[in-house]
Length: 253
Length: 246
Image 1 (cartoon, rainbow over the protein chains, first blue to last red):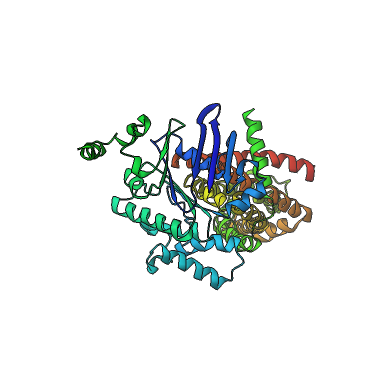
Image 2 (image 1 turned 90 degrees about the vertical axis):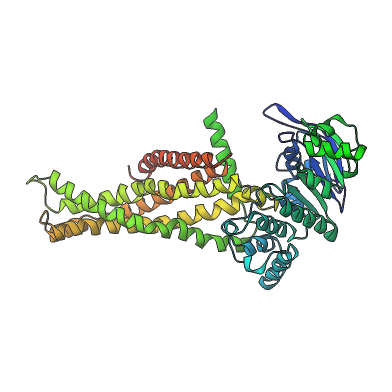
């Protein structure tokens, strides 16, 4: 479980996050949602520690990130996997080398075991074997996301962060990626935090949702409450689309 | 203040770079790759430029020193000492700042803007150490080799002019190359090149590492890397000459 308490973050004197408190549940897909520029990526990067928050607490199963030494943060990060918006695969390495990299770096496994584990992870994300030795630039965006997920889970992380996992993907591939993240979360019993503004993704996997609105926590709930809650910030976000306005009207009839 | 801030960030980055690697095996695997990419792959251009510069310098020296008081072998002597003292180390380093420096800055800069460096950090890898240290050590180790190639190729270029033209007899030219040779000049050239190799790799990596935004800024980082490493090489050249030669 990850808990955030009274988190504040600013850049060059400009406040971006205001007193955010939230709980991200263990073994569930937690979502940070909000409009572009609302501060959700800053929140996620502050939770991971890529940005240092000015005040507050980020508790990883009770361990406060903001009180940790550099060495402790480094050790904590070996329990973390992350899927970046643009996949962030190392373009000088092949697909399988990308997945093997964290294992070679941080495990004592033999070369054969490293390769076995990498193949297991790639099979788990349903990547075809012919793609294993291709370079990241030679595979599609959806395949790149799969490889990035495989790399993220290769070291058996306790916490998985996904920054807009569906960006640049078609709706069908997006659903596949969402389902994959949900399955992996339950299968490996990890705490997953997804940063998204994709309504399909929210309705598919949002077990625990936090809405960020202009740097403040605007709402907290689950996908069941998305259409029924009267929260203004939530309604502004969800019903910006005509489609969802119609969905709400239909559900009221 | 901006300059001081930049120097501070550079020192901070170097502190992170020159720390113990997270995994020595990965470092030793990376080092020869970087040596090949930054050093060995530069031999071709070094050879080409040095041969032509040696040839041109020989022709210019002969044509501009037509004085009966000057011995004919002085052309070989002038070329040898010019290659050893300045060309092979300083001018070649300026050329390498363009070729290798822009390569390092754009490679690391691209990794920065595509979040590959963030991905390394998230894994708990010291990204500065993993990415920059093999490049710095790789280039520094290759510099003596490149300098040696440059000196010999420059002399071959000059000998070629003596052989294929009637500007200067080959025997006089060869005698000039051997005349009053001071071995310390070679040591001086190697020492300078080690410093310059460090400057090129570290400053270029610095600009790449702190690139931000998009492709335009990677290009800007690459330009800054070449310009600033060239300036520092020129300044350092004066300091080193003062310390080692004067």
